[in-house]
Amino acid sequence: MSNKIIINADMGTNVINKNIYGHFSEHLGRCIYEGYWVGEDSLIKNTSGIRMDVVKALKKLQIPVLRWPGGCFADEYHWKDGIGPREKRPTMVNTHWGGVTENNYFGTHEFLDLCEQLGAEPYICGNVGSGSVREMQDWIEYITFDGKSPMADLRRKNGREKPWKLKYFGIGNENWGCGGNMRPEFYADTYRRYQTYVRNLSGNRIYKIACGSYGENFRWTEVLMREAGSNMSGLSFHYYTVPGGWGNKNSATEFGEEEWFDTMKRGSFIGELITRHGDIMDRYDPEKRIGIIVDEWGAWYQVEPGTNPGFLYQQNTLRDALLAGLTLNIFNNHCDRVKMANLAQTINVLQALILTKGEKMILTPTYFVFEMYQVHQDAVQLPVDLKCRDYTFQEEKIPALSVSASRDKNGTVHITLCNLDPRQEAKIACELRGQNLKKASGHILTSENMTAHNTFKKSDLIHPVDFKALKLSGSRIMVSLPPKSVVVLSIE
Ligand code: AHR
Picture 1 (cartoon, rainbow, N blue to C red):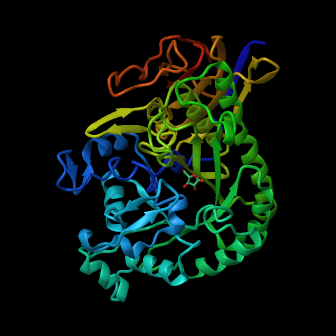
Picture 2: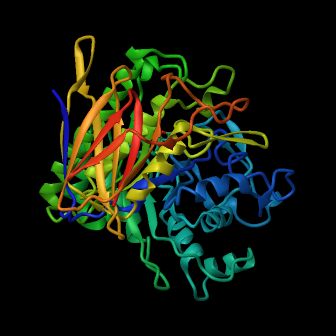
Picture 3: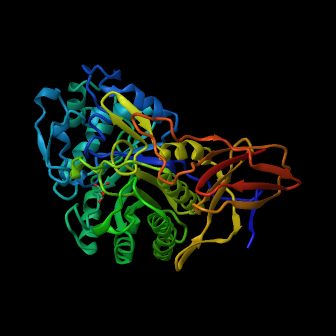
């Protein structure tokens, strides 16, 4: 079968919320400490303790939103331990992640400063599992209240006169698991109670996000929508791509086609999950007022040999780039319901954008996909009709291509394409209806080697380059995608 794409460039009603290009950073391993926070006295260049090289690299991606402090850490985090003079802050044991001592040097002020430096919206996840309603209520008051009150005065005493704006607030994380092992009925009631005290103060309006399901737990979605739908703005959803399965995880860098195929197949499954959870939500919320917030997603492999198993430090190859491109295309194509997504996790943890080693920093293939795809942020999603051959491995098959398209505010159409097949090139005829094609250009991320990755010795082995294998002909654009490649096209 030949590959054919039809895009209706003059249609499209849904906007791809820029928050789909959001990120997640937890107090886990070297994500916060070393990844962002080095302290004011560090020899690594920093602004108020936050490393400048990392901020510069992330700003280039126009990160719209950053989720913090967890993850499982969130339901053990007591925010008052992370304010005031740093040397006086109490420590805690990070029980989930390596059992290390957390010194609480990076707390509310540092996180909100980081977001200001990045130009990103903060998304804070509150503690339901082991925290009190009062603690959550106080946190909101501390951050957002402009008037005189115990919490606002405490904030001022700690050096911040004016409140911050805080839009996104999560009421717990994975409360069916590490966040309290709750049943959906119990969590739904608990959610209703906690969210009552998450107030809109001083003109700040909070978009409340309830803890949602993982994978195929459809009952969780059903109960939450039925019992608490009217009290939430968003419902989270988590899905990790774990090639081999949880008990038999892959190496991040040493794999063959069997693992490659498994990754793409498991990665594609998130589309079906969004459809099925979305179908349940549609019954309670046909207007799609409530967003699906995929606030954890990404690849999960074995940790790098010799590293702390609790730190989840893994390398990142071309395989991760394809997984990121495929997943972001799926989110774009579901943008009527998916309003935010947060890759796990930004630096040194799971499918990271950035890896650091002391003062050194490298960008991963996943970073470059976010760089290429940022053109979709807040653009109008265009309907795409894709007919393509399958990528077959042994007895199994998946579509070889993944695509999404959008039109930005200047009228430029962007198409992002992934050829998931690591062996065969894909020739594609792409027809753009409703637009006169004048010029087209593109960028590509690929390599001869499916395990290609950047290292601290060779930091520039893989990065995007100009894409030349394209030709305009009337209303069509003909492209040849090399095997295992991610491409972005810009068409005027
Ligand atoms: O991202 C790592 C962990 O995965 C998070 O802390 C948790 O929410 C999920 O299980």
